[in-house]
Amino acid sequence: MRFGQSRYSKKLRDETGVSPFHAEVQAQKRTPNAFLTEIGRVVPPPPIAERLHVDPDSESVVRRENWYFADSEPMQIGVTYIPWEIAKDSVLADSDDLGPGDLYARFEDKGHLITYTREEVTARMATLKEARGLMLPDGVPVLVVLHTGLDQDLHPFEVTEFTMRADYMGLDYTMRVDD
Image 1: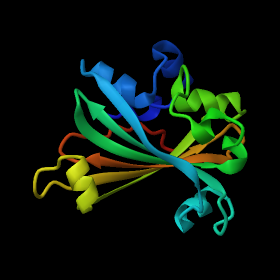
Image 2: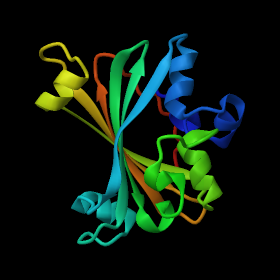
Image 3: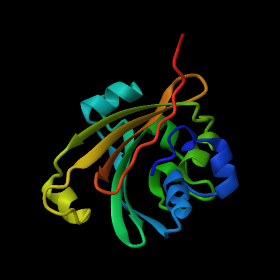
Image 4: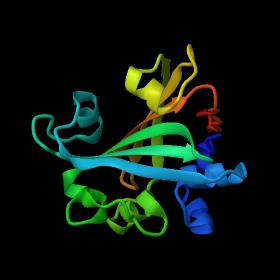
C-alpha cells in the first residue's frame, strides 16, 4: 500500500531513514529490497522532457531504473529521470549507494525539497519484459504511476514512472479539496 500524502514527507524519511518503498514494505512486516539495474545519461522521452522542462534533443537527464521486491517477490519497476543539471557531480548521476534517506535526501542536499507531487495513474496490460520480470499471472494488468516531484519553488526536479503489479497494489490518497 502506498502511503499517499505522507509517502514523500521529510518526517517519514527522518523517522525511518529509508526510501518510501522500504518504509511501506516494512509497515507490512515484509522485507524490502531494491536493485538498480541501469543508470546513465540519456535523451529523455518527450513527455519526460516536457514535465522536467529540459532539452528533448540532448542527453539532458539521468535515467535510473530500479526493480523493487517485498520478501523477494517482485512488486514494481521504477524508472526515474533527473535533470542533468541537478544530478551532475553527485551520487544521483552514477551510484547505487545514495546514503541515508535515499533519493529524496540527496535532492534535498542539492537544494530541492519535495513539496508537491503530481501523480498520473493509469492501468494497462504489461509488456512481455514487465510480465516476466514482475512474475505476473496471466491476465493481471499493471498500474502505471507517473510521478513528478516539485520543489519549494514549484520547479519539477524528478519524474519517476512506476510500473506496479495491480494484483498487489493499493493507492491511498488524501487530498485537500479547494473552495
